Image (cartoon, rainbow, N blue to C red):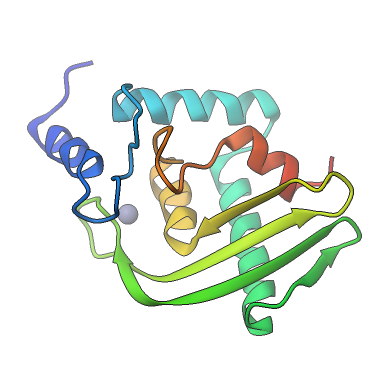
Length: 152
Ligand SMILES: [Zn+2]
């Protein structure tokens, strides 16, 4: 599929370090459309939608937020914490989207696996189906995320 000039600008922005150090695409050589399509295929194979995943990430973040950086139990096998960092980060897509720098971490007590995400990750997944490129600091592997945040 041929990219529109607008898509090209977006992809250039995502590759640059202008909004976040290292950019949103990391070392990934795939196009933005390919990254989004391949992650969508992984979710589909595992039986989840982007809205299922984003809603669970949001719920865990909302649960953890009042505890101000201390671990709290989300269910028997899962604990979460949420930490605030000063500042705002903007969504690189062309719309008004400003997110606080907050990192939520979920850790499974049964497997020890953990995964972290920012408020921006929740938005990028929910509204753009975008888990970031491989090698990006906040790249989230959909399969690992699902293993951690949903009961196995
Ligand atoms: Zn956005």
